[in-house]
Amino acid sequence: MVCVCVCVFQTLYYRGGDMPVFNNLICLSLGSDHKPRGSPYIFWKLLPSLLLNSQNLQTLIIKGLVHYAKEGSCESVWTQPISWDDVSESLSLCGVKVLEINGYEGTHDELTHMKRFLRKLSRLEMVRVITPKGVDDGERYRFRTDLLHLIATPKCEVQVMEESV
Figure 1: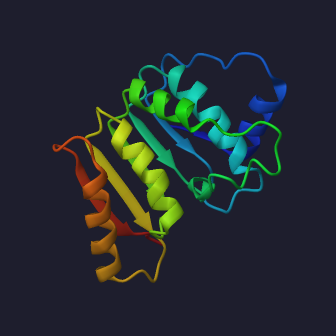
Figure 2: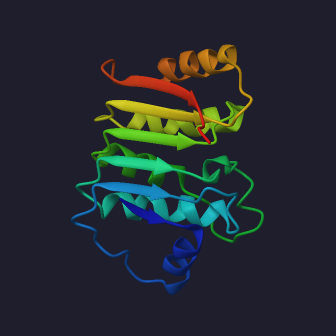
């Protein structure tokens, strides 16, 4: 498994030029086990290029709350707005079969981002959502129900579980 932390994203973003091609990348874990120090803006700006340059990617794990980026929040800080069309297009073209989101709390913004992922990832077979400690079974059941309504492919399994120690 290859893990890409926020500082690597910043390096790729600020160095400019084309994103490298990752032909042998099958599983990618983005973020960290802690809240990111960098900007979610960079994550969302680079994600389309990263997905398009990783044609054999099958598992995408998003850790460290980088999925919390709000649609307008980055535009006030950065001069170039995030193109959600680019993100959506790259998701629909990639071959990801397993999507794992760590730190999911079921907020409206998170559900909006999950909608982007789940409606565009056409080859998706498994969605695994890891919630923080303290989320009760009823909430996890609600999260699972919400996510099942967003999935474009009926064969996709959804698991919602509490983070382990």
